[in-house]
Length: 344
Ligand SMILES: C[S@@+](CC[C@H](N)C(=O)[O-])C[C@H]1O[C@@H](n2cnc3c(N)ncnc32)[C@H](O)[C@@H]1O
Image (cartoon, rainbow, N blue to C red; front, side, top):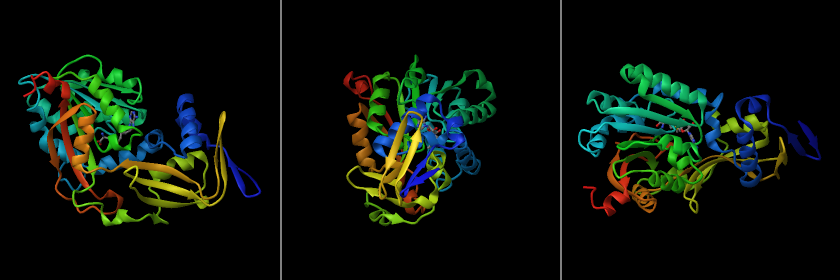
């Protein structure tokens, strides 16, 4: 680290190069330089995957308050499967399986009723992918040869790998993954364009309650300790926690919750081939989440080519702070199904 006239010049720590390939390094450098953001999806790789595996050890589908995603999916799997063509076996396409805990209940139900054709997952994190494959192959030994995982970014070409061939697919985007994306609408449109009228889309999200924005989000909170996975990108870039203050809040224009840091000193982060420059007072966003009401999400799905067939809200879990909000399961079919008149 160099410091001239208060300007701190840093290079990423060795774990950065060990974690990301050349394309990812260039993507991170561009995001840092142009948007002043460390893209959150990259925090699932390398050491970041450990935070999720630890969390998964503790989460079960037993109650909505322990972890609403596995609970919602396990509890309502039968209703989801009832929307498929009668008697047909389903291929589960899991976009971002994480540790595999979210989709487990759906897989269990499909196995019990003998309607599991196969499972295919795409995840950007090789570590989480290995974890989900291990977990699901262990839980469903009869289906081992039909459980396939692929490393890749589903906002890019890997979506074609995930969606290649097949009918009666259940495309799963669970655990809030959709609303962490830079452009959730684009992914929804791209999945719709690759879907058949026999397919289903299953999304779980945390949404703004109809009663309005939770009190906690009505102002920006400073001085909070960042969760390790939220400061991971900054740590990897070599940005010392003493050089920033933290901010948690809600941006009503973008309709996004955010966690960002505000730099107290000017910092240059020198990546291979590119430098991201920050003045004192600039922010670096480390997490953001589009925060819509359930009705807004239905409209969002509609604009992207989907018709919502099921909308199930988890019982309130007493969560506060940035974790506040309702957890909702949406199941949708491609609009083309309705247009062709064969949907109901
Ligand atoms: C919040 S976790 C959700 C995990 C799981 N679906 C669940 O419900 O428990 C998000 C997962 O999506 C993956 N992911 C995020 N963005 C991705 C992208 N653009 N391409 C591929 N995987 C991505 C992450 O690596 C992580 O495994």
